[in-house]
Length: 598
Image 1 (cartoon, one colour):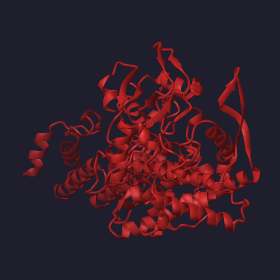
Image 2: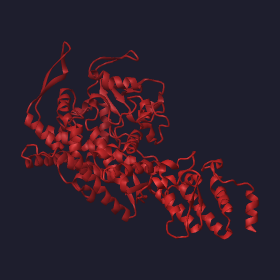
Image 3: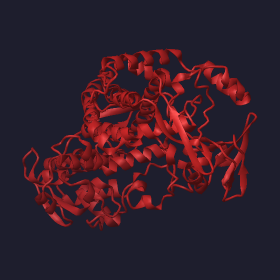
């Protein structure tokens, strides 16, 4: 980030990491060339680890060359839309457990770590869709699989020091292992045991283990080489998988799914807690979509939640699980935009986090604005300005699965609950300084969970009554009157009126004539609850001012003075709308007040 920001006018920035030359790519057209158009020159990730000493790294993410190409071509069919739909009931089963867990959190005060909750959900999802195991992590603080996930992404001090030494002396990497042997042993035993239970044959569950067992059935894998090309023609390459190769694929499925999805979902909840008006819009859409699907989550329902999808994408833009992408030049290459030649062996770094928060790529880049991913606005983005899953042939193979699983988890939470900041919530999250490619939040993401106050079903008749200028009359009944019900049904969409705060907008466009102020106060409070704005500090101050004014009106018996007080206490504050939007005239305000106070 530092070097990227230091040279804002440059397309690339060169530096040495120890004795190794590296290039930071700032220009998005060059990023496109490296990741896609000229991929044959930059197919290696070159993570610099010895996969013979660290066998869990013989996975799709770490391996290069022909082994990567053959693995990728065999594993791609596992992530088609048809496979996702077949797997989705397992995802929904995990997501719906969040309701029970959430209720327990609320009963205990509502304070929770969003990072931990969504990590447990993701672990259960991986267990069901990857291993075919009911892990029950969400109900078990001491789950063995949750502890396994923590071990994968815990960087011991020894390893942090070794990584620094490797930068200075790259050849040392061939002789020192930094993998966690406990993780390797535990995962190997789990996978082999599952293989035995299924008699080394696919079980029909359509999970990740079934895919690997299908690879065993196929035997030797044959395909075109990416490394060996003669006279422009790729030669044949072969790959025979060993048991440890399969365990390594399970490891990357577990690690990649665990970290990226739990990070994306918890970051989304964090941003929605800090932006309650956006959260309300997302929840309203979730409610609306679910009415079409018998109030049940399913693949088609999740696919229709466009606002939730936009919020997730925006959260991943602000905080990408992968801080950067790394490629190594495999064949001599000249950057067409600059005429600079890169020699084989030189590494290129594509700084995802820096690109995502660059004002040149995203206006108001530090702000949470999901609308930038609307179908219209997204057309204005450079195709390589948004890279949470990478791009090109080496883009994340499970991106779609991860997104759908994340959306299902978020929908399950927001369907029943609202999130808001707790006293421990931080506006700016800190990255663990020992994080490598995967960015890890330090200290978790503390938030507060509250049960939603569901609003009544809106009717066409109630909407007609809420047109600007219509007068609503209440009764003396202490319960919700017709007026209160009508006000309560103001949908969020029509409250956006000339820039006025949504709650106050409904007052400005609907002249309430309270017969008794008890009813009017009920109307106001009901409006706040049913628009889910009772947690908004601006709205809360407005409602308090209105209620306070109504108490004075009960004594003064003057409706005009009542509206005068509303104007005085609410609309004259800079944080509310300009008072020329308010429909009630306030001439002789001072005189009226003086007369009524006598």
